[in-house]
Length: 294
Image 1 (spheres, one colour):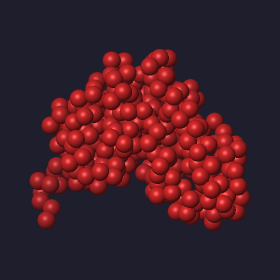
Image 2 (cartoon, helix red, strand yellow):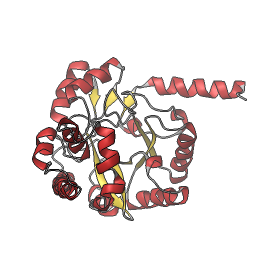
Image 3 (cartoon, rainbow, N blue to C red):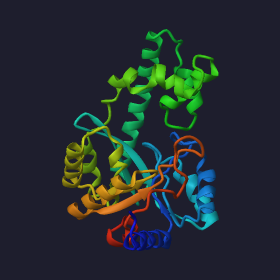
Image 4 (spheres, helix red, strand yellow):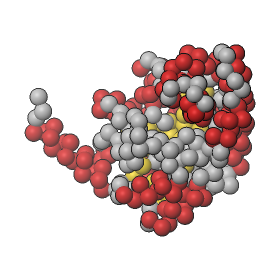
């Protein structure tokens, strides 16, 4: 039963959330997003976003275009990137925010991860050949263009060449983790990445904590380790998170006395992705947030 107190609390949270429209997690065609940075910023403008970050996977190549578009629309662009790491053999994503684009340690990590992505793509092509498919590497690289090559590019090539009915079928039959799981353990260790970046005057955010395939006990251990390594923030709400998961993360943020970040994790206007600037409401009035310090 929803009480008057509950309704008042929800209204207060919604009003607080609307006070300053922010989105610190999104993707463009420079990684695995469907829109160019220019198109993405236009969409952010339509959604009344004031503070925005483009956080492509392991690359900041799209930031220059995003800056130009942000200036046109009067949006404050916060430099961002989503970094691939490993924690206890589990792929974990960390969003770095508000950094200098010429930061040497950060660029060193990104260059290394781009090399890993290319090497991973070569291994994927070999595994697909072992499953009876032709060599798709060159076609996937062409499909990727300026993007960071990944499994979605192989999926699109499969559809184009009639090897799969659609991208979902390509993943179900060839590209899912159950088929390519042995390629997951390739990213740099989370602790080593944070140790390089924690003194570089940037925000280090544990991305979408409730999406990892781990138990609550392991999640709490992950957050404990993340903070002890030097991480500064948790993504308290990412896209269509369940409200109960947001409440859980709010409590963990308070326990660890760290900050909250939020984002839509927008990849495109279709499919399961949340709209730019849309994410489950959180208790902004009672939790310290990254943007209050900027």
